Image (tube, rainbow, N blue to C red; front, side, top):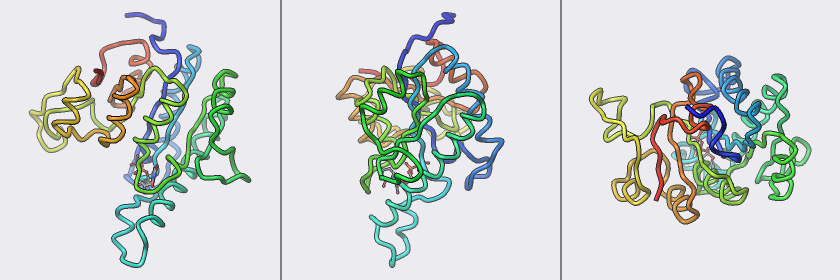
Length: 239
Ligand code: UDP
């Protein structure tokens, strides 16, 4: 097993649900567990960008079920939820000795920096984890698409999509115990079969920019660092 990282600059997408244990809200043990997984990656000298979701606080599409709330408003609320998560994560990373900065696509200048490619690259080169909040800054998108977009911008060598399950399966492993995990897949297969792990816009963007995606379970200790060392964990999606 190679102990050196096979990727130097990585974009990790964490869903809001990854920051809580009960499906909603934010809780300290869940965030601490994420920080523990990130720690060895930073110690290896890997440059890490995090895109954080907001589904633990607000999901735009669900909120827009209320006929009085416009879908765009609901989505902006969702994007602001990602800023809340990013701030929590930043403080917990810094408390663990990992320098971190939040850059938001939606300007919230009194609490964090605004997304700016040059600032992002500067922080990465200075050894800081960057937490990219506010999604793409536009409604009707998701933080998965944001992850693909930011990975393309910062020249990440891989998008790591953290999920609750061990990768991409041929059926839902939550409801089908016999579901089989794919070790490797191609972008066209994921798109054609609508293998619902990441939204299709995100997959397409990674395909266009030739950025591999690894879908894996973050809550298994050692998985994140293992993926970055090139171990066969989760599902690898490539051309
Ligand atoms: N969102 C958006 N544009 C973006 C990213 C996110 O409108 O570029 C909104 C959308 O309402 C979404 C919410 O923010 O439901 C939270 O993001 P997401 O659902 O991707 O979070 P996750 O499920 O990964 O926690």
